[in-house]
Image (cartoon, rainbow, N blue to C red; front, top):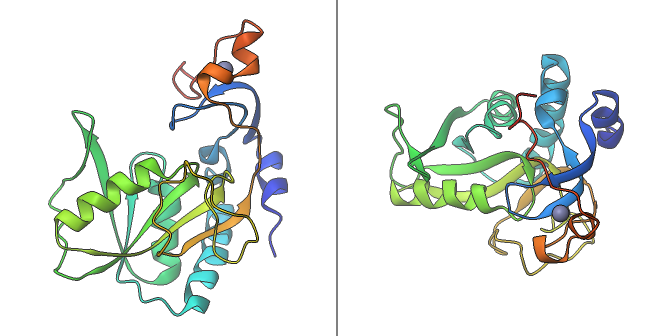
Amino acid sequence: MLDIEKIYKDAGALLEGHFLLSSGKHSPNYLQSAKVLEDPKIAEQLASELAKQIKASGIEVNTVCSPAIGGLLAGYELARALGVRFIFTERKDGKMTLRRGFAVEPGEKILVCEDIITTGGSAMEAAEEIRKHGGEIVAFAALANRGVCARSGSEQMSKEECKLPKNKPFFALADFNFPIYEPENCPLCKAGSTPIKPGSRGN
Ligand code: ZN
């Protein structure tokens, strides 16, 4: 079994500070998956471990779809490990959209893959877009889970903010239970600091 926390730490991908997550919540920790995935060998290892879980579940997957940009590398590697095709959705005028000539067959079984799942908001937007094109969402997957949603095989309960459907499996390699705060209740904000959105300041 891979030690996911160690892999993130060793890659300098487990950041400490005051961060604005894409879910709009604040946290003293941030997982910068791009730093882990810059090593293709590690990306391959993580994806094949995730693929093992998915194959063991017996779920049939025709295609992996990721919301860009965050999910691209993880989803592409997962598709390779599963031996299926890979497509992605991207934001156009703020709306998650299937573009670039990607087509979905009626009833095509699609797994939505992210690098990290917090509430699953972006994953659900991608899933909605796939459904509109006639695809069937069979599961969700992420390299790491922020602990809001319950992943398959874990004892943890899904929290109310989790947007993923309870009747679809969610596969992830590890739970990272960092503190997550609503902006209005964030002790770091109360202490006078301003959250940063990693990657948005030229780093
Ligand atoms: Zn804050």
